[in-house]
Image (cartoon, rainbow, N blue to C red):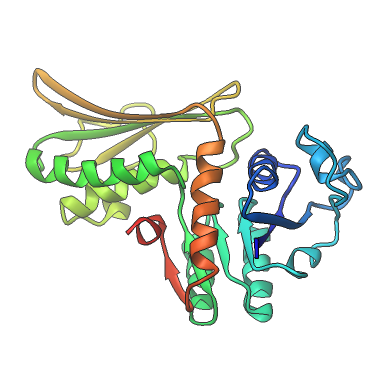
Length: 266
């Protein structure tokens, strides 16, 4: 039996990518997809929506439709919507995979609280390459030590609403972990005016927004006349969709708990 997956935010960038990947898969079935009220795509066939043959299922503004006749939900929406989806998924006992970013600490804690009832897989980035990059950063940072200065540069399309990206923060957390640091205490999110010299141990962030950039992340280590860069470039959103779908298949077989992409890949 194919695994049935529902997609909230089906008319968004990631929503469309996920829908297309699921439709084109031989062992998956697209259950339902929803969007916000008054969106122009409401009523469109989901196949037509993503540029392929119709599948006789339509995009709806009924937010509860994604919990009908489904095995698992994949959510790449916005924090407020994701919290609603997690609450309902818990009520209906449906596993959920979350790729939404931009949560506050309170929101993230609330999401985790539902993992005692259902499997929840969360990642700020479902790229396999980013998962490997995190491991490389931990090893590299431990070898270089605290004297090497770290800066993170990230670039995304002009419609991304959170900054810095969840992935940039994810990578920074790997660096901080390797140094036994509290990221909240040493992250430098902006520099403007006369800010004084760079503080030892801080992690700086630079952000670019423009065009249709899918996602670029560079972690730069500086030490006097030497510089080391570790980069990741996403050329297509399908890499995130593939990782999220792999996580959804995995989550559909799991007991309640809070998991990440590394758990899925283990």
